[in-house]
Image (cartoon, rainbow, N blue to C red; front, side):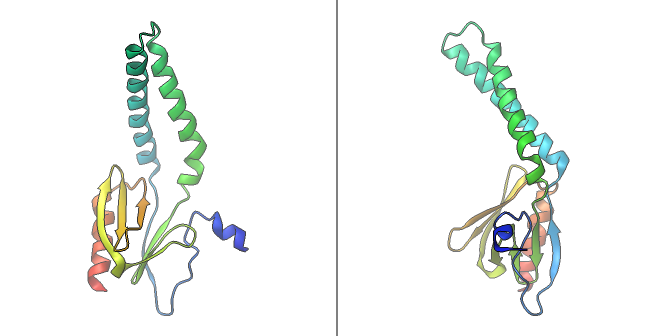
Length: 149
């Protein structure tokens, strides 16, 4: 893979260290992706209608159409990329798309954020493992790996 391909890779491209091994991979869940976008569309529809109602527009229903269209276009446009993303948990690091590499010892906080798991490092860097089908399991696996290091 050439250097430019590494920039756009949706999977980890960081080489494993000597003796390092992948213990688990985290991939997005297609059903979770579409469920999240359905909720986002419902919220966008309500907000669009509310904005038009507040503005005194007699065609409030068009806010629902606009909200749904905006979220649907985004959902279909990015689905192919989002479904390719993979994070690998090794016995030493959490490896993300492209060259993201977070040493387990540097992870300060793990939290749920919708269907995502947010990883915050001691230096304040933030990473999202999006569309996880079981956030609690994702967090538990990373915490268990941290405990072993």
